[in-house]
Image (cartoon, rainbow, N blue to C red; front, side, top):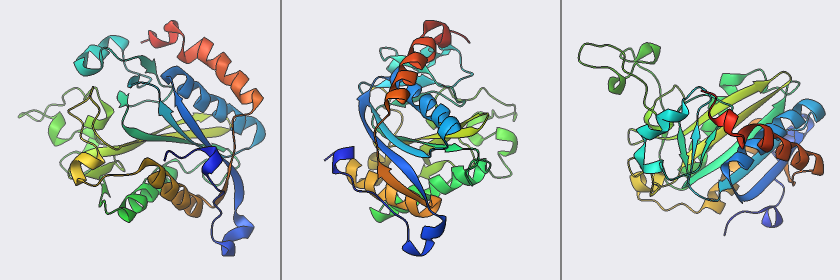
Length: 280
């Protein structure tokens, strides 16, 4: 069963910590198109700035969708023939392109007053640590990628030629490596990107559950471990881990009228706008 707001109960951290716990919204969205998913994340970032609300949002995709990193060129999407027929959207965060399909996707938004808002790297690694713990619960032993002396400065074994010269980064995010990425059997299966507004921060995370029909070269957790994961169970376990680590009492919520209105405006002006998509 897919997790929804209707069948999810509030998660509260250890009662011994209740004096420093804050209430946070938990949104479990149905599948939507890429531009809308990006716009809702942006609307929640703006809402965090305005209201101080912390939000954890899980979302899905109506159809396999390619999202470009902010600095990537639209023309470069032809570097991945498998996704040529897929809708494409440009993210507001950097990094490589992601084929959103057979994955677990979620975002976290914090206002600047929150203890995590100024700890970018701590937030990144803490969230990934929660993912590792949740996966371990189901028998999946993954780890975090750490650069070695052979790949300092962003140069990895797969990004250098025989002469040691730097080669262009891979087009796809899951074929790149960054400190703190989630690795299983040598393959990247999870990563996050952050975007900061003036008084808030957004982190969105993608966890590759299984390979997509339009990205067969990217194995997911089930392909590498032979362990079948139930998305609802994994989501539930992950929410509990995040609640304990972030000291947040997650309460089921839905987008407010104002957030929906803002997301529609952002879709029209940005993520669903051809000028934004073609800007690089």
